[in-house]
Image 1 (cartoon, rainbow, N blue to C red):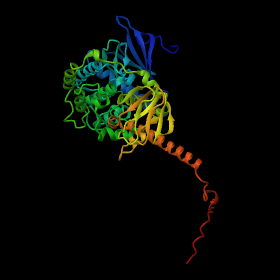
Image 2 (image 1 turned 180 degrees about the vertical axis):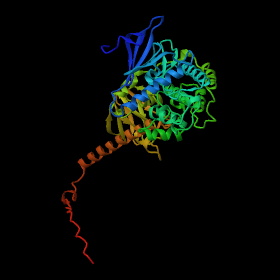
Image 3 (image 1 turned 45 degrees about the vertical axis):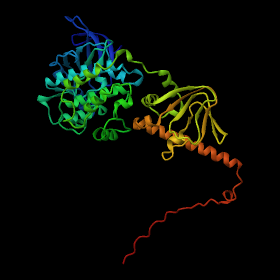
Image 4 (image 1 turned 135 degrees about the vertical axis):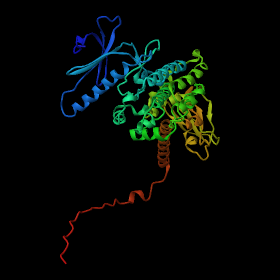
Length: 460
């Protein structure tokens, strides 16, 4: 707080309430105003090489937000009162809204009750519908730009990338591509096509998907792969990722995330109407918060080291948390079945033809061979609990419907487990086998390469 100014324009600074990469937000008061305001200030960088361009971009964001939002008057859109550009900074005075960004609730362990999520997105639909009727497209709808307070009142903020339809220019798409959020962009926005209100509805569909499932509909290891998926692939079924959701949400999200503009929602009001119909199918008291204790147990295990948090939640969703007594038969050799288990607490005995071949403890997988063998799917060993046992049973049919990333991580980890066990089995066989007659007599063959300069061509 030591570097906070006493005044910004006519506003007396009370305290700092937020800070980002380019702007600082202060709580402030002003003469004649009963309520405090939030003042967002950017300080221009030194006039070094390339900084002038960055300053102009920041200033454009501020000016766009000021010019557009001052025209809008909607309960779910943040209000802006004042704006000024000074020599070394620019600032916006806006409505103070004690809030947290919606992105806080995009993690699976912090997911909101379904009825609350639907209600928030319903309000956003109506706000975007109103904005478009005033000639405004937001173009950067994402959880970070949607604010909620303790009573779940909603405000859409950050109209810096907004498009005024009456004044759009050829450079607008390029500008957004450089600053926007690719994971929430519509296919037409990524392609740089002309935009209408449907691009905001697509982005809001991505937000709804994220809030309901704890993950994005399209995920990738690099931006190029992400862009390819957004343009070419269909999103997964939301009800397969979260079976607790009413089926109507699947159809709503398919329509919101349509790549074909003619098949997508025409306006926010139509989107809101469908959400309203589903909202009455949801009983508020049915909400059960996720069990974070189970998540914490898996997060600590070496088996799940390469899994992202959202994939561990996905594993818990498609699996079953089992507790059994000692001497309980879990799998029998020769039987068909492709489910497999991960030991959480206790041990299991692995046997073949009535002979013990191993004991597996916490963090180890069992039954993986039948899962990986897509041709026979038969058990190659008998598995019995050697003590009181807690394990996570992964259902093969459910895993087949999981996200690509989750399936890939399970297969990679199980193949690694299988390779290590084959290696251990080979070592045990080697301890009982006869000495090799050839391995010790093979001579190492080395090649030495020497670079020789080419002779100059002879004159003919």
